[in-house]
Structure formats: structure tokens, C-alpha cells
Length: 356
Image (cartoon, rainbow, N blue to C red; front, top):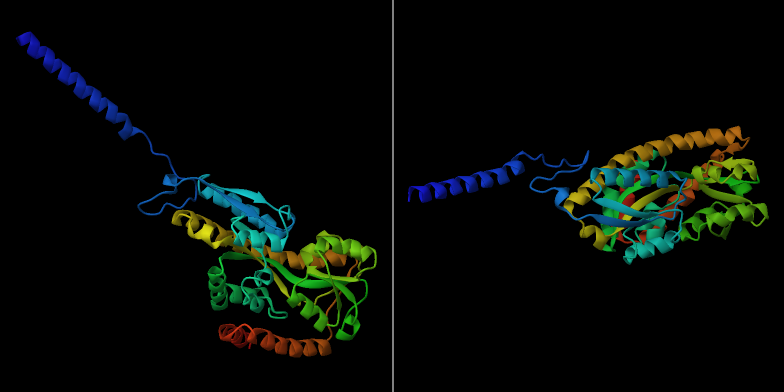
């Protein structure tokens, strides 16, 4: 009997030791650390979320500043999410142009794209307010409009149309490069210029006296070589990287419009993302956007110096032309925005008051 009792007690001790031994490693084993910079919301962690792949297609050339910083953002998001967020990224318009990729994003074919407000006007007519010619006078003013009350109002309009505006990268003010020297509205008359097939651009250039030929920017260089057109308007990065200084000796600092490329997402896709993932993406984009905008302004100055080094002569409209331009475009703003409704008119008045 004593032997039996001793045997039972020995077995109990063995089982107790095994149980303690099984739990001990779990207590001592180090937990995995989140990726550097990854968000760690209270009560939850991106480690507990399923990995996702975001389909992100853009129309922009790989050399453009907006593409450069889009890729920096992608890298930052992938790092901060610990690899839980990855991107199926295609640039340079390989999957379509601005209109096609925006339509695909609205319809859910793509999760995200980069576009300009002028293209969003198809879905959100109020976009025309942000695309008005001669509206922006400086980079600081662009920040004030897009990041402030007007921009927030506009973003809500986009959201209601199924488009989530995440932020804006800058491409810069638009200039005109030409075979003929242009210094006034008179010298601009009937100069044949390439224009995007967007009504605001056509209105702007025609009001300045140009004759417009609509075509893709990729076709414009050949059109210039063959004499179909004699001028092109675009941000400096596009004009310089394409080599227009080889064809055109004159650059006009018209700064008639400002190109801001918004990173947009399909609203249904965005609404379905985990809050932790949204936080990672928006925080990273905010940091990258500040860098991109500062760099864009610096590069504009550098491109002007680069054009000068190539022998391109720089001009601006003379004072009489500037006065006439301010008057006719002030009327254009009023007439154009009146068709967008009372809210848009109110937003325009806020801008005008800010401009003084």
C-alpha cells in the first residue's frame, strides 16, 4: 500500500513539473517588436491585421517629382507597417492615362491613382474652382487653399462622389515655351499651342490669345518638330526633361495655372481599411508631402537656371498685359464659379478675401 501511494505521489510531481515546464518558455520568450515607426494603437496592433496589397496605378512619368515621392511614400508605408501593407504599383501611364486611371479608380478596378482636380471635374464639378487660371500667386497660397477650409470643403465633395483625396503633391506653376518670343498679349495672338483637352485649359490659353491644338503631351514634341504647333505649356519639370530647349529659344513665365497632383483612393476601398492602416498611410503621406512640396519649389528655381544655361531666354508679360489679364480672369472666375452653386461662390469669396 505504501509503495502504491509513493508511486502515485511521484506521478503527480512529474505531471506538475511538466505543466510548469510547458508554460515557462511562453513567459520568457520575447515578443516580436513592431516595425520601426509603425503605429501601435491602444488595445490593438497592426501585427494582428491581415496583410493587404494596394493596387496603385499612376499616369505620371517615372522621372516626375510626383512619381519620385509616390515611391518614397510607398517605401515608408511598407516599412512602417512591418510589411503588412504592400503595393502593386504601376507608373508612367502603362495602364492608362489620367482619365482612364481615374475612371478605373472610381469604379474599383484600381484602389488608388494620382490625378489633377481638373480631371476630377468629370465627377465633381466643384473641381473647377481649384483649377481656375491665375488663382494661385505663390506656393504658400497654394498651401493655404488646398490644406485649409476651401480644400476641406472640396475633399468632402469628392468623398461624396466616391473619391477619397489623401493629399496633394505639387508639380509646380505652368510656363509656356515657344519658338517665337512672347512678351505681351499682342505677341501671343494666334501662336499655335498644345493644350490638354480640358475646357479650363482651353479657355485660359484662348483668352491669352493663343490658338489651341489638343493632344497628349507625349505627342507634342514631334508636333513641334514638324511645325504643327509652335508653343507648349506645362510645368518646368516636363518642359526641361523632354528637352524643349532644343527646339524653343523662349520661355514665358506666365504661371497661368498651378499643377497639383492629388493622391486619391476609391472611397469604398478606403472606408474598408483598418483604422491602423489608415493611420500609417496618412501619417507617412503627411511627412512625405511636406518634403515633396519644399523640393518642388526648389526645383522650379533650379529649372529656370538650367534653361538659362541652355541659352533659353526668359520673359514675362509686360505690365499692361498683366493688368489686362487680372481684369479678364477676375470676371472669368466669377462667371465660371457661379455655375457651381452657392457653396462654391462662398469658397471663391474666401479666396478673394484672402488674396486681398
